[in-house]
Amino acid sequence: MPEYEKIDGKAVAAKVLKETEATIAEMKAGGVTPGLAVVVVGDDPASHAYVNSKEKKCTDLGLHSVKIELPADTTQEKLLEVVAELNADDAVDGILVQSPPPKHIDEEAVVLAIDPAKDVDGFHPVNVAKLALEDSAGFVPCTPAGCQRLLMEYGIETEGANVVVLGRSMIVGKTLALLLMQNAKGANATVTVAHSRTKDVAAVSRGADILIAAIGRPHFVTADFVKEGAVVIDVGINRIEDASRKSGYRLVGDVDFDRVAPKCKAITPVPGGVGPMTIAMLMANTVKAAKMRRGI
Amino acid sequence: MPEYEKIDGKAVAAKVLKETEATIAEMKAGGVTPGLAVVVVGDDPASHAYVNSKEKKCTDLGLHSVKIELPADTTQEKLLEVVAELNADDAVDGILVQSPPPKHIDEEAVVLAIDPAKDVDGFHPVNVAKLALEDSAGFVPCTPAGCQRLLMEYGIETEGANVVVLGRSMIVGKTLALLLMQNAKGANATVTVAHSRTKDVAAVSRGADILIAAIGRPHFVTADFVKEGAVVIDVGINRIEDASRKSGYRLVGDVDFDRVAPKCKAITPVPGGVGPMTIAMLMANTVKAAKMRRGI
Image 1: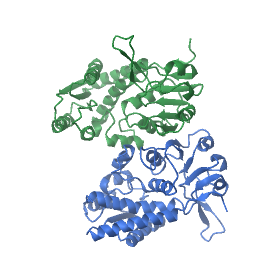
Image 2: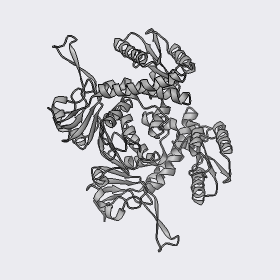
Image 3: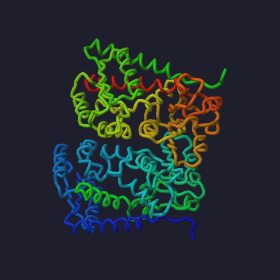
Image 4: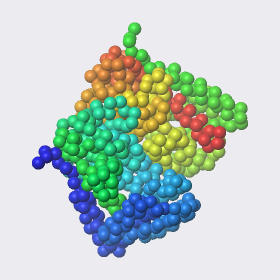
């Protein structure tokens, strides 16, 4: 038996989804069905797989689901029209345009076009600012929100803890830093953001009570990055070649799990750690949007 | 002779103001006079002193200056009308409503009402988001921008440096953290934000190559907070009683300068450190606003 606790993202995601389902059932009993619209442009198989799993989850939970599939040659103008229609559609509480869109699309402009009150991805500047300003009426991006929820569900104290976030992307790293430094429950951490320019990133990481890896480099975090008894959250999802698999690859995190885990108090695996939380938090954000929009 | 370098904020501010003055002269030669409007509500003597010094600086530099003094019983509605008029006034490039307004005023709503393109204080959510998103078209709040400029002018390398920011306010602490962690010149630091919930703040601070104090507690940072050879930036301006002064008080920073300075490579005094930078950066932001608004 390992001494470390393996954080079960599937189980926590299932709990979040169950809560969300119950809330949706209540809302429906009150005559309101929250709705999520997902737009995907082009033929990327991974994007379609994501979109389909989101649609299925909506159906499972009883959400009103709108899936809009647009051809790869859809113009920016047309996509913005679709977003405008969804903004105006009262049955739609959340809007998500699957990333990445084809290269001719200006993704930033698309995000800006989404009504911030329906921006369940939390990427609109209005929601970015709300996060920084600690305004809980905003939407927190799903993956960082999922990381925080995992910590909370496992009773891992963040208040006063030294958190080191590896990576400064707005999708995960910087957002998680802003989230965990808030004066709020599940936060109040002393947060350090490290990145590609950090000197001696292993030494900085060893200062962490909670180490969060979000850099997108397979097995970047080795045992020497981790203090005995630390908690490690691995946000990375990287494909590496694996001839033993039929697909020819397997998914690994940013953390060298086998070598790091024995030093940890708790650690998320990949897959089955942070991954399942993202879609669960998306559903929770959609219900939050529905409640706020409809004044519930 | 002390071994440490005392960072001369007055000299750097004078340099910034001189540059700004030269830019204004060029713009005026081209037929454009940048303008700053400052609104003050009520009779607070400190607020009026700030506003008057801003007005004088505008005049010195050749800026078009608008000072609007409103009585303490000005309604929220009236103040928002004034802001709307300034938004619409093409001669005004920057708008600043002096803080704090009287208690019956909703300051957040006032900030939101300012055209983000004229928000030279950098407090509007659109500019907060631009800072987080590393969009250099936004306005960085003047005091954090001034701290960064001091570091740059003194050739203090931030790239890869361990920066510890004490304080998580949006006006200084969190903003400075977002600024110094950007992938940009004068930034690229490994940034830690510490605050009231931080455990062993002295130990966290001792990890800093550059320690920035922005907590508003007189002489909070003592010698044991500082690593030999660190750079210390003191953003605090606190009044403490001093019977030897005619006023009965004197201004001190968050840092116990006399005991901390001998351990430092460089340190800002209070007064004369960060303080003078704020107004200089305000003037620079106003010129930036004028250039952007007028497509120069």
